[in-house]
Image (cartoon, rainbow, N blue to C red):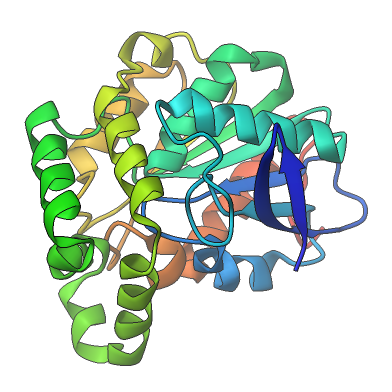
Length: 270
């Protein structure tokens, strides 16, 4: 299991090498998950492009360091990973809070971001009231108290009906996250408003959303795409908030097509 210390924070990660493609893609997780959510995507793309997955500070097997106080704490960790691997330019794929991290990293270091892929995220997610209510509930009763409600927006009714074992596994992943990392990241999302920054994004950007996402609905993600000059907007059918688990094939198709459409890009098969 590969670990690296970034600024005194031990981060759990996995780097998948590839030849012939210059753009490494870094996948940035949603709240309450670890990097195993990308397994089906990585399996389909392996060998086509270099990929890095990692557990955010306070999630999975990564340390929490001195805590999570803002989105910038997560950005600092990611910048440290980029430096550790010696990447020049990267493709950032951010899911939910990972999309906020990707946008904020671009704001701070635009020259190292070649492409942004923002999935089921926005320039501002939720309200102070909604996040404060969640934080208070989790502080009092633990993540398990909100788990069933979270799973309702993570996945479609069809997923709940037909994929019971996977649903149970995802529930286990969620409720076993460390409370300080989960609560700190909730507060970081609450305090993040990247509306003005989104208008200044100049990198090629693809915004993706599941058609049944109950956390960041399609209209919200479309509003992010409308803010970013020239951004492309795509909806994945039969998916909730985490398409990489529910519809990995559709997601991989969008990644391949978008990368191939870029200057100097090429499809995964040619």
